[in-house]
Image (tube, rainbow, N blue to C red; front, side, top):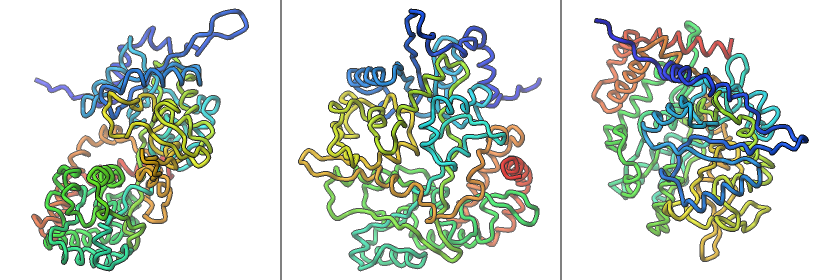
Length: 519
């Protein structure tokens, strides 16, 4: 009896797409509207896109309809959204939408190499209808959207980011100890020791090993949290095999044995609940947990002294501790079955239009109708007041149903927007101000060696099916070294085990793709 091989995600989607061919694919070439001049009625293009939403059921229907009508007036395009459910059900629903012969789909997000066989190349569409989209992203961002032949398969959802992994310190505890924000490894340790003397409950929270490496590994290795080229064989190797990684592990083990690291840091705990305990002296995790979660906690609780401040650059024995985030090849893509690809790009381009000088269109797509859902306080300086707070219940607001430009790009322009409280005081939105200020401040971190390579992980796993197991092995064993479950003296054994787990296959596959972009 033979066991059937489970198809990969790409094979599954392509198989479903083949089953849904015929009239559906024939409709791909349908024009946006018939040519004028012969008395024929112009067809209104109606586009559908699939995305997540802060409100799983959507926002207020009346507010959503009002935004939809305004966008139609402004662009001539009727926009609609398929709201994807949270979690694993999102992937299932997206797969069904892509393969459906009856449900329209004109835009969705994902890692573009996984969908290359069922999506449209965008070079011509962007050149004709998306000039503002092209201008709205840096060359660094566009490089992640192209295959090695230079074909563009989507417009960026993310990009190269400098703002995601600053260490945060309890500012009131620093002030209490008479200390400035640290800028060195020794200064960071000294600051924590001072906090601990006055606040025995103080801990350092790492949001898992991955985020811990983004924040700190560069202090001990040449490349930080990055794959790197081993000069011994000119092959790409995992960050764990750099010189200095053992020193980093030893230091993290020292923190663990000293009781500095929060004991649940590697167990995926409820970090929001952890923030509410007010025990975190140093935060080494994803930035928005501070700029969004903590800011909400602080505002709702009315804290006046308790707060956090970031350090722009921590330097350790080997140099800058932080590693810039290469983002990913996550893209907004148009499926081949789209009936109105031109209209879809035209609508997205409208959001980018006149940016960064004027962010009105972006705010319409994000916040709703100006004068009803939000209002300008100072348009010239992009100061606006959102009528419903971000935490308002879904039944009261428009909930970003038609926003198809999240991430870098317009979001880095609209971060200049401020919020005005009901009492008339104007304050910065902490999250948007952070992105606007730091997203391209790369000098504070190490540049990943392969930041511009959009790896096709599906192809890698097709050729090396054990890749997920290899990655899991590296993660689990590294955590054992940190927590002392495995002594550092066994490092040589660990390296031998890596070879047995598939290091050579891993290195071969990643190097092959790296060389496509860096011959």
